[in-house]
Image (cartoon, rainbow, N blue to C red):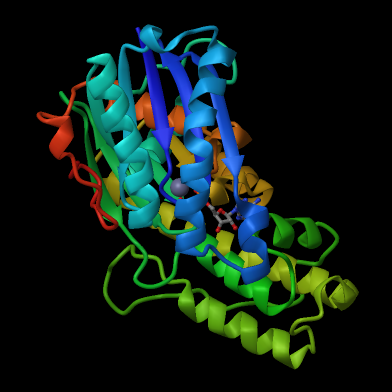
Length: 352
Ligand code: KG4
Ligand code: ZN
C-alpha cells in the first residue's frame, strides 16, 4: 500500500509517500519562511497563495522521489484542521480532486494527531510500533498539550492539559521578535542561548491556585519582554552580545522548567494510580529544541519511561506524520463522502 500525505495547515507545503509499514518513501517540504520573515510571522493570505503555487508540483516531485506514478497511489491522507482555513482548503481541495480522479480513499487527519505519532517515524525503514498506551507532549507554534493515547480501534487520544494562553513556540517567536532575532524565533533563541548562562535571569514558574496541570506561557512572555527592555535588548538583535545570550538561555530554561514541572506532577498522579505508561513521545516544532530534548529524555529515563524523540525533520510540520496518522490512528479509513469533507481552523484531537 502506498499512502500519499498532504499537509498545508500553516506555512509549510509538504507532501509525503509512506507504505503500510510506515516506511517514509518521500517527505518533501517547501518552506515559506523566507516569504513571511519580513512580517515577523505568518501572513495567512501569503500562505494560501504559496500553497497553491507549490502543492501540485511538489506532489509530482514526491511521486518521482518514491519512484511511483499517480496510479501507484492507494490512498490520500490530508490535514483537515486545525490551522489557517485558507491554507487548509488548498490541501483539502487537492486531495479531494486526486481522490476523485484516482478513485482512492481520502483519509481526513487532524494535524495534532500527526504530531502525536511523529516520534515513532524513522528516517529509514519501518516505523516503530505505537505502544498500546502512551503519553504525548505536543509543543508547537500553535499548541502546547499533553495527551494520553489509549489503545482502541481507532486509538483514542485524550487531552490531559492545554495552555490557558500562548503556546510555547508562539512565546519563543514573540520574545525573539522583541529582541530583534529573526523569525522563526525558536531556533534563533536556541542558537544564541548556546553561549549563555541560564542561571543569570531567574523567571518565576507559572502556577495556578487550583490543581490543574495546564500550561501558561503569557506571564513568562510578559516578564521576558520587561526584562529585555530593562537590559536594553529590545530590537538590538545579535548586538545584544553576552547579555542577549544569558537572556535567551534563561528564558529557554524557564520554558523547560514549566514543561518538566507539569510532567512531574502528572507522573506522580499516574504513579499513584499505577498507570505510568512505558513510553512518552515529545512532538511539535519546539521538540527540535536541544535543551528540551535533553531534559525530557533524562527525566523519562530516571523514571523508567522510554523517551521517543522525533527526528528533527519530523518535528516541524511535515506530511509524513500526516500520512502515518492516517494509517495508524485513523486505520486508513476514508471519509464517508470525501466531496463533502470540510476543513476547520479549530478542531479538537479525535474530532476528525
Ligand atoms: O510544529 P510547527 O512547525 O508548527 C505548528 O504546528 O505550530 O512549530 C513551529 C514552532 C515555531 O514557533 C518555532 O519557533 C518553534 O516551533 N521551533 C522551535 C525550534 N524549532 C522550531 N522552538 C524552540 N527551539 C527550536 N529549536
Ligand atoms: Zn504543527
